[in-house]
Image (cartoon, each protein chain N blue to C red):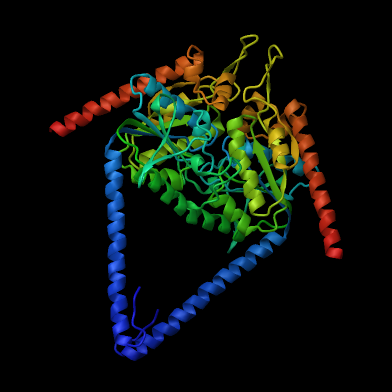
Length: 309
Length: 309
């Protein structure tokens, strides 16, 4: 800011002018950012968030397998994942992208990391020097980072963007919902236990209060079949996901059984629907994918109708 | 704020005085709050936070069972739990305290809910109208709420306060650490999978960067023994917790096996070390408790020595 130290009146006036022009600059910058956000997001056909309210129920596993399932069904190079979990980003590890990162193609052109079948991945993990590095951030910084990921990264033309939300109903999900108001919907993941459901129910209310459609509930870690003797053991109980969906009047998408291979595949960076295509878990998952496709089709038809009238 | 609309000079002066006195009032209020916090916390001998960085690894289960173990070993009425997970408070459910709440004993005297063996519990859950209600809060509000729980609730004289932190290394853990700088240490909970560990390692760094001692790492959901045939299946792999502790140079406290009873007991509101005292999980847990006791004893001795010199 320029000012004249020797003339009181002159200085005050100058300062005033400068403050006004600075405020205008800030406003213009914010406006421009919103325009870029809108432009960026308008190139992505479907945006779906995966949420649970509670941690450790398999949100990230569901996200990578969903992305993979769509990429395999004719959407090569047309699927993206935004890993919005800053404190525990695990998408890169699950897709074998550890050590990869964003690519800078030119001034201001940053593109996501590219995973199998051209899946585009944006994650805080790519910006951390090591696995031990925590992101000790309060909310406002996280809001800025999410905005940056959506505005300043060149996602390009996509058919699907899956957003992996961290546990809870705090800063990150709120920011995502405010930045992408035209989201297709939210998929809720739970495990069958009562304790989990009490928490996950809150995610359904969160979506309802913010007017985002709930695509449905997935029950993960549902029942376990002993690989030795075939006995079924419900480690985290079973059926809770369906009951919750019925209670809250939202669709139930299906149950995915516990399978030690799912954990091993995630650790090795290969989605289980690729590595173990014929397992009961993969079959259950593909049925869920079909239901999501149907939801998007129906929604598309309704929107088309609404545009006609 | 009072001002004189008809005298320009008088108004400015008055406003200035009032602003200054308001600032002083705010400063005094903050100072008084800190004094009350210090006084409240000085009555609690040991403060231990349970953290994981990642959700769904069993932090809350470890917290209620730790509290119960200490209460059973001679500390009836001397143990408290602060459930610092606003988005997914599950401590009340796990202790059979659903539907209970804080008690108001007089003007300004609010006491925690009282659980089995006199365990004092403070949780956001007690303030929510229903299980479906989400806490859609950004960080600053959560900071205020944690402060309120520590300052305005009459915890009384306690030997142990266990603090169940939500997933991540964001607002809540930061606030707790800033509000209770004399914490005895942090217990880190993980499951054995690589994906979980990548996230949980960050919690160890978090503690180190903020200069809080790490009491040790607990590996939860470690291995599963089929109740029918006795076959051992490592659903989330095994041994990862010990490896992580060794890598990071922090103590390893022990492994707790997966046991369907743990989930069922939590859902029924009874800690598993009470309901299934002779199970392998309970035995493993009690060994961990012993190690924590030893840690506190050693720390007490060191502090005594330091006070002598």
